[in-house]
Structures are given as C-alpha cells and as structure tokens.
Length: 288
Image (cartoon, rainbow, N blue to C red; front, side):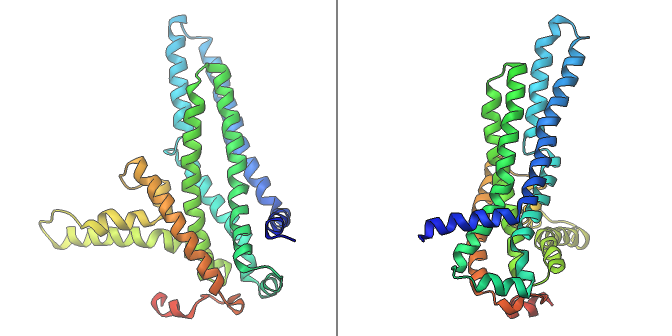
C-alpha cells in the first residue's frame, strides 16, 4: 500500500469516528447561514410591501450591506462559533492522547506519527470548513437571486477565506494546548491560559504604569503591540486595533509556526504522559 492510499484510508476511517462533529458543524452553519439568510430575506420582503417604490433601491442596498456585515469577520457571533468549533474538533481528534489504552492502540499501528498527526489535523479542518463553505455560498446565492448583486459572491469569497484563516489559527492553539497536557480538563484550562495570559499581562502592565507613574507616553511596544496579538481569541474577536491585512498575516504565520511546533511536540510526546497533568517534565517548573 502506498503512503498516498494509506493517508486517504486513515483520513476516511478517522472521519467515520468523528462523524458527530461533522453533524454538529453542518447544523450550526445550516441554521446560521442558510436559515438565517432566508429569515432576513423574508423580513426584507415583508417590509418592502410597505415601502414606497422610490425606496426599493435604497432598501436593497441597505439589505446587501447588512448581509455583508453579517457574514464579515466583525460579527462576534461567528467568532464565538469558530472558537467553540476549534475546541470541539481539536479535542475530538486528539482526545485519545488522554487515554492510556487508546494511545497504546494508536501508537502500536504500523503508521508513522507524522502521518497520523496530519490525518487528525486535516480532518478537523475539513469537518468545519467544508460545511461552512457550502452553506456560505448557498446563502450568498439566495441573496444574489433576490437582490441581483453579483458582487455578493466576491465578498462572500473573501469573508470565507478570512474566517477560515482565523479558525485555523485558533484550532492550532487548541492542539498546542492538547500536546502540552495529558488530561482533558487541564487541556481546556490550558486553552484559556494560552489565550488570556498574554493579554492579561499586557493589561496588568498598563494598569501598573497608569497607577504608579503620573506621566507616561505609552506602555511599550511589546505590551501594547505584541502581547495582545498572541491570543487567537483576541485576534478573531478583533479586540486590538489592527488592519485586516495585519490580522490575516498573524493568522497565517501563527498557524504555520504552531503547526510545526505541534508536530514536533507530537513526535516527542511520550505515550506514558496520558493521564498526567503536564505532558513534558521540562515545562512543569515554569508552570508552577
């Protein structure tokens, strides 16, 4: 069996085990995009019956702008959805690392760890982005048919690409937390730690400076510019002031760096770390 056919076979078998996560993903995006858009269109048509003929064009423009805002990356609803899905699919894919029996079973297979890692990682991404892409373009087609604005397809394409990059960034952060821990509860707490420690430290520095110094110009480049951008949640919710291009660059670079780190940690992770609080002894002291 070639490595290529083995990869797709493992991908298929892993997908069967995680079919429930796909069902959750489909339901979320079906109701949030297709049903949500249909309800918006229904409300628009109802209101247009009472509008003056001269206002119809402006109403259409306003509806299209509302749809743009709804699917855009400034919508906190979808930021929350993608953060939750990142945790769900990452935990469902790598939860076996928390069970000694499952770890022994997986690691006894005649499969390289690198291949197993990429199968689990890729499946988690596909489970979320495939239903999202399909539902997004169905929603945009509904708007296109009713509004006649061809630009909606282009806008949807860019919105989909932006959300996918932000999702993958948060997804790799959750996997990083899983690699560092041997217990699911500790892994979830580690996700919160990785996302909120740096921003909290930045806020603490700024509060100390404003409290103990009567005059100061700024809190510093690291605290003001860097620490806030180390958190996937802060980036996806747009907490810091930054351009869209900067956010996308952070998401791309952060995802690539974390993907490499996660692979290295997965290769070095001992099977005996399952069930322990921390997977690597070297980081126990700094955490304490």
